[in-house]
Amino acid sequence: MKRKLTPKQQKFADEYIKSGNAYQAAIEAGYSRNYAKAQSSKLLENVGIKSYIDERMAKIASKRIMDATEAVELLTSIARGETKETAYIGTSDGVYEKHKEADLKTRISATKEILKRYPGDDKLVKAQIRKAEADVRIATAKARIVEHQADELEGAGRINPLLSALAKGAQRLVSKEEEDDANTTK
Image 1 (cartoon, rainbow, N blue to C red):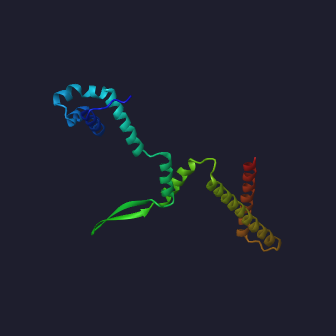
Image 2: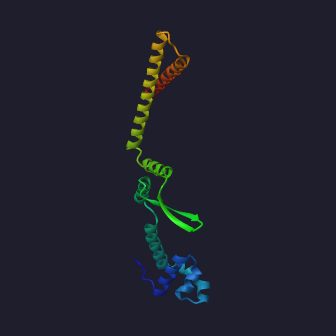
Image 3: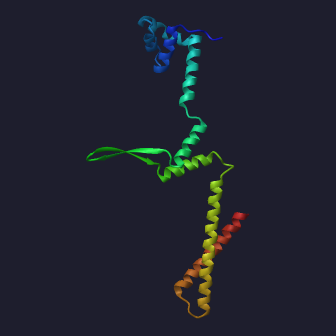
């Protein structure tokens, strides 16, 4: 059962929430200095006052503290470039305010933070992995083409030492890529 507070007790509790100082809150609520000095800590022990303060603090916390949904929404807004930063630029004519979207590094960081919260549904990371694998296949194919061209020139007796060195390097690259692919699929 909730105890009804007197107007003075409620004022004390409200002032205490603002300042965190029981003595000052008692004075602001209308208690005498002598009473505030001797009894302010006892006011905090009053079950009704304590309950009122706890309820009010819970309401304040729920309004002021960001929940998970709000945090992800903010990160999304940053990652999309919707949230603007304010920069102050000083010139000889004065200080100017400039609003700009977050830089790429900040946007990537926000995206990573969002992805951390969805480990099982990481479509972006999967797409990036597919792209990286495709890039490796393309590089391997290009290396094989250079190697083939070098072999043809060598067979025709027109070997270019630079092309030969490139071909050997390409062969090592292809071998390394094939070895890495074999290790990845194990």
